[in-house]
Length: 451
Image (cartoon, rainbow, N blue to C red; front, side, top):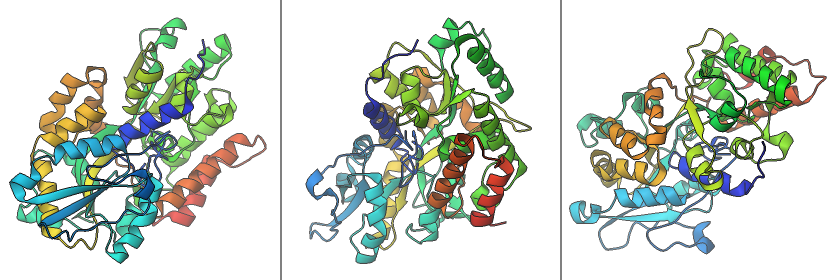
């Protein structure tokens, strides 16, 4: 039943580009993370890069600097690193010079890592972009470093109008009640099933709603087809989705050691040792979507970026997008990427930055571009129906939003993610390891917790 993997790289690029709007702070996830790009996020394991309105080419992208003193009126710069991201933002800002007298220039970075590695120094030198797009994965470390300009005064004064913005997305961008970003795109974590394989294996009419039901299917598939049905990419994006589904979560470092988190990780360890789980690493693949494309697993956690990846590489495979199953005493529900426009520190034109963000946040072009370019849910609730109309294959995802939760990684998010991944890989791949899920979260809590 396995298909030859057509292109390990293409899947990653598509997935990251779709997420990049959500970009990254993420898994798409690990990789698609703010600066790293989570997997999906491969976005955190599968990720990619963009284009510009005015001339920056690949040769000088790494050293690109903002020049806001053109002598031709106010010019604002927007830093991007993914093609789809720049395309939808370019569409959103069309007309702003005629309407507000503000010029917009897009600055291209070759990758998300180049972007984040350079931003602190550019802020110090006064050459950083005025605005960036970022997701809510690894953002806390940059907020903690003072790289993001608070926008609360502009929201409170009405310069930036948040009417119609999905409330939970807005909550994700408030830290200690201070607004650090204006969200415009959403992407809930989901449980993805290869429906072709599901039907071929005769697994019935009811899809799993709990992880125990998932394991029962895994046992059946292993017994009857000698394969691991569940692909788990050992990256923070996927591990966080499962922790949340058990009623856990990191809560910005306050609850790392919670029993629910320990139970979720132990569940994965036990399932792997039973032979129910396969990882991209052991197959030599770049990410979970690659595993799913070549049909080496029946299901995985992921997001809307799967749609584009499969359309390009495996259009004959039908996917089913389900809510993240429930585990333990949890209520199910996974993560929600939320892409936002962020004002960087030390812009020479903070008032115009706020007006520019408001210009697109109150208009329709940004939300329509989010749908048309990347097939991602817009953060403006009035555009949910537009999304359903334009992306009928992913209509269900809108209904999953209310059960989602922000990633809420601790401040040292990248180091935390790396430690979490390393501990889980060492425990799962070493048959002699006696490390438990509780041991893992206790160790992480001791190093990164804020209890």
